[in-house]
Structure formats: C-alpha cells, structure tokens
Length: 396
Image (cartoon, rainbow, N blue to C red; front, side, top):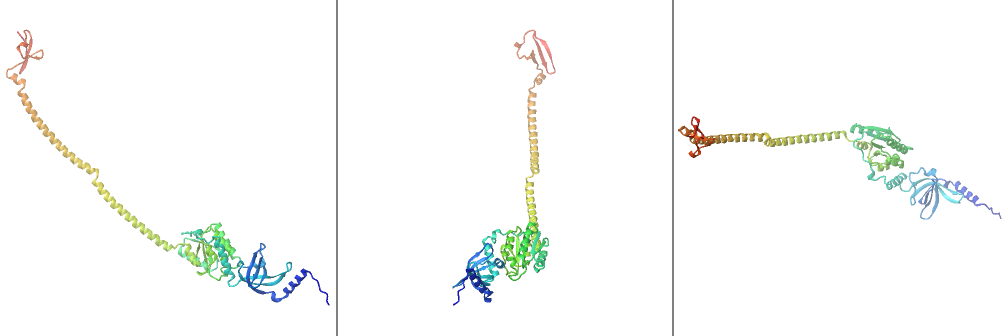
C-alpha cells in the first residue's frame, strides 16, 4: 500500500492551475451569460460574475483588455466573452479571464452609442434651450474635416455659390481611426480660443458606423458642447446619426446641407433687397404724393384765410367806410353851412350895426350901456357909437 502524498494548499491550487492552463480547450473559449456583481475597480480592471439560469462563474477583465471596449458593461447585460479559464492561486478561485466582450444580440458600437447618448442626455447636453443661434450673415465659416475628402470640396462649392462674401477657414483633421476624436476636439478648441470663425461646420462624408465612430466619442461631444461658436454637425448621409449631431447647435443631413444652413443665399438676398427697395420706393413715392396733396389742400385753406385777403377785404371796407364818412361829413358840413348861413342872415338882420345904420346910436358910459335918461347925469361923459364911427360928449 502506497503512502499518501501530503501537499499544501498552494501546491494544490498551483497544480489545478497547471492542469487548466494546459488544457487547450480552456485556452480560447467563448462563453455567453448575463453579467451580475459588476465592479469597475479604481485600478481600471472589471470584476464580474457570468451566470445563466443554473450556474455562474467569476470573471475578470484587466484594464489592458477592457480599454478597447466601445461600451461599458452593466448588470443584467447579456454578453459573449472570449477568454480562458484559469485559477487565481491566492484565493483558489477558478475564473474566466476575459480578453474581449461583445453584447449578445446587439453590436458593441450600437450599445456604446445608446449608452453615451443616454448619459449625455441626462446631463442636459441635448436640451434645446441651450442651443445657440446660427448667425445670419457670417463673415468666416470654420470647417473641421478631412482636407482630402469629398466633404470639404462640397462645402467649398456651396459656400462660394451661395455666399461668396464669407471666408472659409479650414482646420484639417483625421475623421476616422485612432486619434481622430482627439484631433477633432482639438480643432474645435483651437477655433474657439483664436476666434477663427463665426460658425463651425464639423463633419465628414458617409460611411459605416465604424467609420463615423470618432463623432460618437465623448471627447468630441464635450468639445462641441463647450464651444462658444455655434456648431453645425454634418456627419455622413441623411440617415446617419451621431452623438455629435445631438450635441451640436444644428444638425445637417450632409456636409453640403451644412454649408447651405451656415450661410444665406446671396441670390435670394438680392431678390429680397430689391423687393424691399421697391416697397420703400413705392411707399416713399406714395408718402410724397400724399404730402403734396395735403400741402395743396392746406395751401388752399391758407390762401382762403390769408391775411392779405383779410387786409384787402378790410381795405375795401375801409375805403367804403371812408367814402361814406366823407359823404356824411360833406353832407353834415353842407347842412351846418346852410344852417350857419341862415343863422348868420338872422344875426345880420339883428345886428346893432344895421340898426345904427338907420340913424340909431349906441350910448355907453364907462363901457356900460346907457338905456335910460336916468342913467346919465350932468357932466357925465358918454360914448356915442354911430354906424360909421363914435364920438364922446358931455351931458349938460
């Protein structure tokens, strides 16, 4: 009978680990299950449990592997994991070491898109009330896109046709692949820091979700959200939507459409200006005609009430009154003269001289009339007035 071998716990765990590590069937395998007990450790590693209806297994995904994921795992999420089985010797735990993870039933990029969309929406980054207005007449249009793609040429053609007054300021960037999101975010910040434009067009032509993914990165979303310059997102074709579209102040279905939204149509502006000019001219003409008619009406009224007319009228009335007064005066003078002549005739007839002419004398003593012989005494000097002279005499 053989003597049993006694080994330590560490030796046991190491032996089990060696057995599992040497089994090729356990080195690369795909395991489907539902995530529970998920922990996003501060070290950057993911710790979780994969389970189905009857069993479960612990799993770990190190930071070097999970940094490539486009989505963030969550409890209750069904996933398919690629990895290998081994033992964590210190704890004697058999667990799945995950190298890659994909959502079960939905693509990783689609899931990552929905997760980031929900996250930014909850932060209020999609709210309409924070959207900035696109300037009506920009002098500079900033374009952040690939310098070699069709998008930049489409934008240039539309801008030169619609509104040649605007200057196009191009900041060339990568629009897909490694570092594209950081490149786009850097361009947006540069344009803002240096006040290079009045409005920004950020975008590229169409492509797969992988091609457009740079515009679904949180880095780009934050740069668009923080931009003081209004941003028009123009990513892909009309049916393509990216996170950048939701955060931007305005979404355009294509780069060409973005250029049309960024600037006004100069031809339409000319028509509008001509229309307004015609309206102004017509209004001014009608206004002047109305003023002229009103002036003529007031002039007629003023002429009717002119002081000259009143003066002329009063002058005529004055002349008439003068004539009437002259006539009245002359009539009065004639009447007075006639009456005066009659009075004179009467007076003349009663004149003392007339009486004296008939041989009568007027006797006065000391300048007083003597009308009675008793008024004269002997020795009085009397003045006798005749018709042709006077004499003095003494009373005897």
